[in-house]
Image (cartoon, rainbow over all chains, first blue to last red; front, side, top):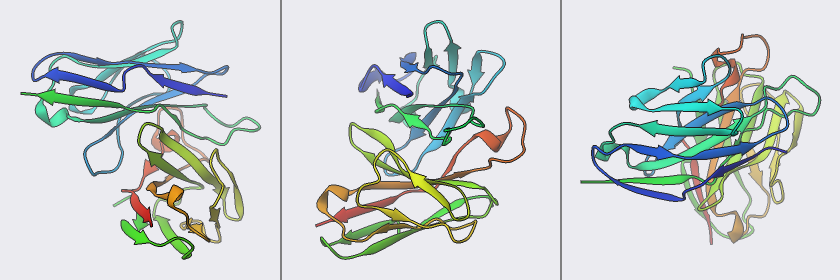
Length: 118
Length: 119
C-alpha cells in the first residue's frame, strides 16, 4: 500500500523568504506524484505533478518540486513567498494504473499549513 | 467549461436524516471518486467508480452509499448520518481510457467541495 508523509504540519515563514515543504512517500511500484493547494475556505487546486521525464517539475505561482527516487521524496519549493501563498498544501501519490487491483486512488498526506507573515 | 459540480456546497442536518450529495462532471470521464477531508487527516477515499454500474469501496466507506447509473453523475448517499460524518467532501473525476503519459488523462479534477455538518 502507498503512503505519504508530510514531515511538517505547520510552516511559518516571513514574506519574501524561501520555503521548502517536505514530502516523502512509500510505494513498491512506480508512482505519479502531485502537490495540491487549498486556500482558506476553497477547494483543491493542482499546483504541479510528476508523471515521467525530468525530475524537476515546475508548477503554477512560482512553485517547483523535485522527484528523488532514491530518497522517495517530492519536496515542494518556492524561492520567495508572498502573503497570498498562505494556504494548506497536500502532497499526493498514485500508481500509474492499468494493472490488476489498481483503483487509481490518490493517497494524500495530512497536509502542511504554510503561513506567510509580513 | 470542464468541471466537476457538487451540490449542496454547505449543509447542516440532524442525525438520522437521509441526505444525498450530488456530483456531476461534464468531461465524459470514466472514473469518479469521493473523498472526505478532516483536520489533521488529509483526504481519504470513500468510494470510487470505474464506469457506469461499477463501484467499489475506498478506505472509509462505512456509513456511505454511492450509485453510478449515468456516466456523468456519482451521488454520495448518507442513509442515516451521524456526527462523525461531519466533514468536507470532495468529488473528483478523471479519464481512464486513452491519453498519453503527461496528458490530463492522469490527473484527477476535483469539485469545489461540500461542507456537511451533522448535529
